[in-house]
Length: 167
Image (cartoon, rainbow, N blue to C red; front, side, top):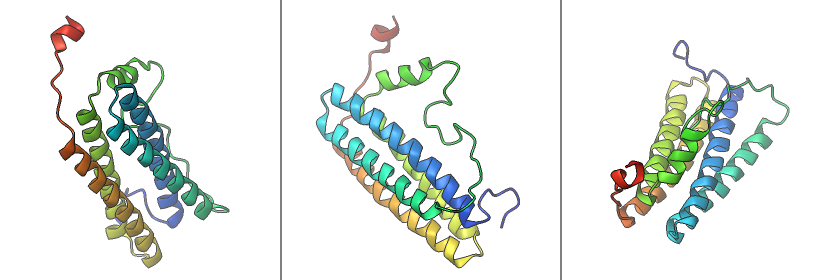
């Protein structure tokens, strides 16, 4: 194991994975609702499907973790947009200015980071069971990456008139 690497035990991996899935489910739900407000039903449907899957992954991980002493993960460690208080303006501004194409790129970046995290856990693990669990999690993220990449190819990149927005 690398010094300072947060994943030493199955409990560590589960704690981090639960936080990653919880954040992803919340952000995908928000993005899905925003895309529906914009009338982009295809992208809204993808985000809402991903939100449901991420929430299901979180519940499954919590079942696996039942009875284990999980370490505490700092709030906001896996935040996509910001860490919350004291101001939520940045989060709200980002959400309201997102185009479907940009929202998909943010989602892709988050999925890639999650996959890389789990792949690093797999590579750095000397424990076979921990490595298998991390590989399973990385593979799930790989499926999500493929879905988001496909949606990006089908979604035009709109150009925002920033002077009209902030002018």
